[in-house]
Amino acid sequence: MQLFKLNTSLHKWLSLLIGVQLLVWLGTGLYFSLMDSAKARGNEFRQSYSQKGNLADFEFIKLDKVSEDLALEVNLIWILHQPYYHVIYDKGEHSYQKYHAKVFDAVTGQPFVLSKQQALMIAQNTYSGDGQLAMPMLVQPLITDYVRQQNPMWQVAVNDANNTTIYLDGLTGKVLRHVNDDSRLKDLMMKLHFMDYGNSGGFNHWLIIAFAIGCLLLSITGVTWLVQLYKNGLLSIKWSKKSHRIAVSFTNQGTSSDISATKSATVLDGLAASHVFLPSSCGGGGTCGKCVFLSTKKLPITLSEKDIYRQNSLRMAIVLVANISALMLIQ
Image (cartoon, rainbow, N blue to C red):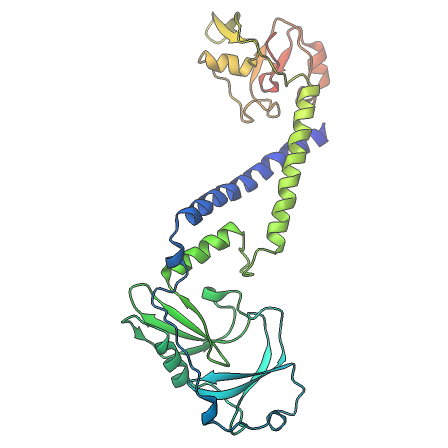
């Protein structure tokens, strides 16, 4: 019996937790169906900008004179039409993952560090709106607008109607993302939809795995509960809709009345259909023991009643005191 109570309690709590997230899924899924995908990208004022220069205008230094450390990868990049070597020593599988690299002037071989003024010029060239750009700030992760990014970025806030923010790679000045209120709303919906409450920036995290296990447990406990109810005679499929009358006495009023109930109805539901309501905190689940009725017919004792009432009381009762929320079917 204790296992049965534990099973039903676990099922109810899982229903509550999973039910809330299912409502969140429904709401966010509706948003994704109705949203304007073009606006949600955050590129309302973003424009293409090429920083490339003419190779023939430069005489490049040899790579072996640039860095003595063993490089994993070396790329020629352009920053404001000037050539640079992007030397990568270590990097992850994806571009947003943490990497270790340096930038060297491809003509002089000197180390290069992007300045605030250069970052501002790049940001201005990629922005087509009429908003005022603030001075760039070099920010470290974790960054709310770009939670997946694990490397430092230049953040350029724009004073416009949609609160645009431009993000550049902290080392190379590459434009990584334009963000505005539309894209922030989409990011919030993505966070809720994928349960990314820990700001991992993805959907492969422990919380969604735990939720999947919870859904499995909800199914198992639900089936177990149904089997237990069937064994106790509390679950039955009735095709007949015929009804018959039952005499009910109200001892506190000294009156009696007949109610009409179908054969497939429970005592609790039959009384409620006739506007006779008894207290019940479990909704007819047979676990609270709050709603009690006196029956002139001997009814079988359920496991719930055995757990709620003392055995002596049940054996000595001339008229069986049955828990109405045990849902004994009307015969």
